[in-house]
Length: 179
Image (cartoon, rainbow, N blue to C red; front, side):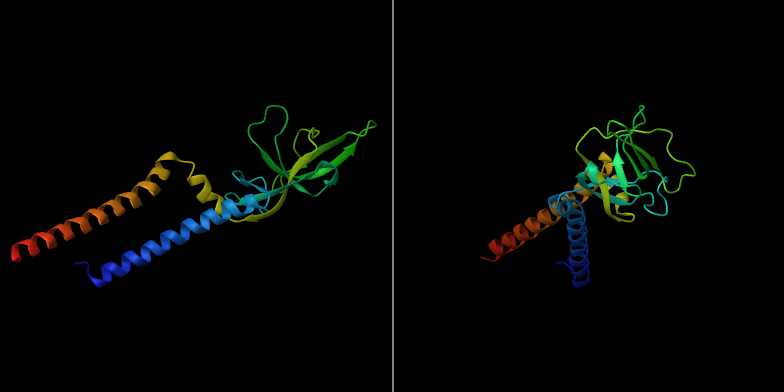
């Protein structure tokens, strides 16, 4: 028979794991359903505004609505790896009407060395962020950790089911002996 403290600990542990899973699902799924894109801040170039490990949510807006001072997430030119989330430092309009952007990380002393144009009609612009929440999402990208997070509860459920079956079989055998 399971003792009361052990039973209580299992219930509390299960409730905490369920709450954590629901919270993670909420911070990932609800904004996506509302049209937001999410990015994990992995560098320190925006420290002070968006610290490393923050989960940044962007809303896609028409490029014509972007202004200097807006924070955007974009694919930088000249083969720089990955996406960049920086503040628009300036927008120059060329004679043909093309808008040329220069960005800068808030924690960087100088603007980015490149200028670029946005070829699409829309662009991701920062809307809000959750400090440190990106660490959990980034950790889930590690296959071993995902397996641990899925595997440990699965093993605990299997042990609990087997223990229940063992207990029920023992009770049935004891009852058969008495009869």
